[in-house]
Amino acid sequence: MYSDKVIDHFQNPRNVGEIEDASGIGTVGNAKCGDMMRLYLKINEEQVIIDCKFKTYGCGAAVASSSMATEMIKGKTVAEAMKLTNKAVMEALDGLPPEKEHCSLLAEETLHAALWDYAEKLGIKIPGLIRSVQDIEDRMVRELED
Ligand code: FES
Image 1 (tube, rainbow, N blue to C red):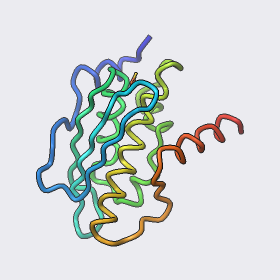
Image 2 (cartoon, protein in one colour; image 1 turned 90 degrees about the vertical axis):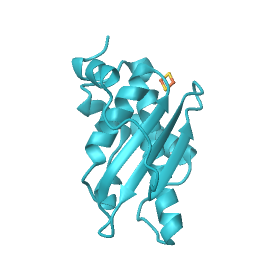
Image 3 (cartoon, rainbow, N blue to C red; image 1 turned 45 degrees about the vertical axis):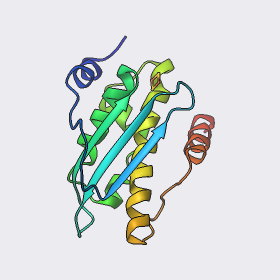
């Protein structure tokens, strides 16, 4: 049912924890199941994500997605991290079962929430940053329809 990568990231999740002096923190609940993720980002003056940690109170697919997402954004610029989608996270995990695809959304939504927090603290705008979870879900529906 799950790929080896999903099982590996679920059993040995990377970057679990908190960052005390985080540049941005995002917390998002999954409307479908009530599970929750919190992401901490440490971003330097060049807008490079130098560290990130997460806590997920969710299913195995959500833990694996969060773990993979943190690996994919660490060392990336904010602009590069903005390109991370739940689809890319799923691909990196060699796929998720269809009924678990929504779990990977938590990682993308929480990343955007943490970046929003970072941008608000600095009083800057991040091009393409979507605030609401609904906007992301609407985009997913559009992608499915295409
Ligand atoms: Fe809740 Fe997967 S079932 S995040």
